Amino acid sequence: MPKSEALAKGEIRLRFHGAAQAVTGSCFALQTSEASILVDCGLFQGSKTEKELNYRPFPFAPASVDAVLLTHAHIDHSGLLPKLAKDGFVGPIFATAATIDLCSVMLPDSGHIQEMEVEQLNRRNARRGLPMVQAIYDAEQALATLTQFRPMPFGTWAPVAKGIRARYWNAGHLLGSASIELEIERQGDRPLRLLFSGDIGPNHKLLQSDPAAPHGLDYVVCEATYGDVDRPDASFERRLQVLRSEVQAAVKASGVLLIPSFAVERTQELLVDLVHLMKSGDIPSAPIFVDSPLATRASAVFEKHSGDIERGEELRDALRSPQVRFTESVEQSKAIARIRGFHIVMAASGMCEAGRIRHHLKDWLWREQATVLLVGFQAQGTLGRILLDGAPRVRLMGEEVQVRARIRSVDLYSGHADGPELAAWLAGRQPVSGSIFLTHGEREAIDGLRSRLIDAGTGARIVVPTLDSAFDLSAEAAHQVDHEEPARIAADSAGRRDWHNDLSKLILDIDEAVARAADERARKQIIRRLRKALAPD
Image (cartoon, rainbow, N blue to C red):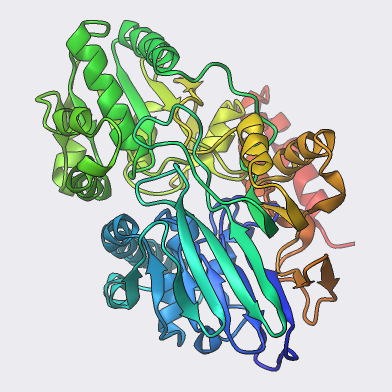
């Protein structure tokens, strides 16, 4: 929605300003001649190339946006709302009541993280003689943005902008998560019907019911996070069996089980299962430290809404279990390092990119007694993904750390449907007269889901947008619009490791080569070759 752009009467344009061939930064702009709305406005995560987008101006004028429709509270969907308001957006933000409650703790926490990270960066920049940078937004701005939220019930049509009405459907992904159905008025014709999937929950989701959505649409914008994955049996029994085995193996090492966990819902699900296994005697009773102030506050929101979710009573019991210990202060967090004997630490972030988990990893990654259990999606370029891919050494908080801990992964706690479940969900939306846009997935995942849909006979109507691409929508087909301005990053940069990841690995490789050198002469020879390679032509 560039400032100069004005659509002719009857034109409808859809733009993809995030989660295009990548998993984070969800932001879709829908514009008519009378209104402009956003579906989601999320923070970019992953590589530094993508995260740098958070600091740039929006590719549209925030003041021109009439409303935002939020699918759910996860930061990759909601995390740039305070920046949007800071930059001029004054309209309503429609979301379910539970999503508003979660955003009331998640957005101020995100603002606090922005402040802390920029403060640390500016200290380093000052030492290096580099310019200072500003936080994307602060906790105060995040709190101010909460006044713009408006509750939206499930299953009820409501006007959201001139000529546009919306209806929310349970997406089964997270407390309060929604798929959003839109109807756009067209003079002399039937309304155009669109559905934005948001994130779709899998079968056997611990605290959520199965997703629901309408059928008979013109366009569907669908996530593809796990489009290339066929999960094994993800039943309640199977999940407990796998978790029990992982904990028992960690107990034998007599150290710590570190679980980098998303503070909202993943942590609460794991608490239910861990407490259940301890009560049944399947794993030893041990302290479970939830080392995340956000997880503590989010757990209170879950307890408030426990009557609206499945197995809510079990969740309440787990949150009050004597084995579960919530930490708040930095001093309490540091004290965990003095614990002896087997214990479990759950801390954010789930991709190991920020938060207290990085301090615990720095303390334990180099020790064989530690087990790191990854329980969620790990985006390309994140520390979690690098560990998952088997890196023997990593750079963490400015230091090289040898990886001797056991790195394990359990995919049965994912909040996302896998490939067969996504294909089945899309089959339930048929007939779709226009196109299916595949978003919120890395390219391998999107290709996997597209292959499934082609096999099911819907391949001719599949579109895979790139960042900032735009499409004019009619009742029959979507027509791509030529870029009026260049995309903010190259299409092949999204969802990939970037130069910073390559540089970190190069530094590690140089350190290893120098350490392996036989003597000082050999070390000097390595350095001479490097200098020669770096010399200008």
